[in-house]
Image (tube, rainbow, N blue to C red):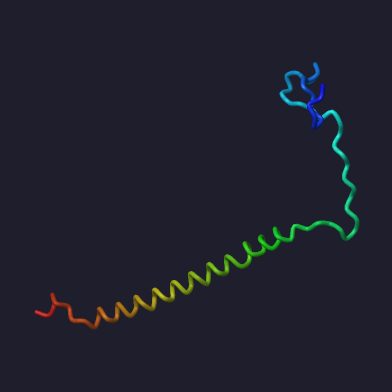
Length: 91
């Protein structure tokens, strides 16, 4: 007795214990792609290129800009602190 989609209601004796139901007919064969008609996963290739080439460069430039900004701000702060009189040593 068939349930549709190539499934049988009860496994045969050789299939018992296997825990799966098998297709009653083989999968249809696909024709081989013709020359020049291969489908390429262009989106995956672009995503991989961006992840490998663009993102690391952006992270490095972002880190360089962040470091330069903090260095510039902290040097100015250190200069201002060095020029200001220290209240504990001015006595």
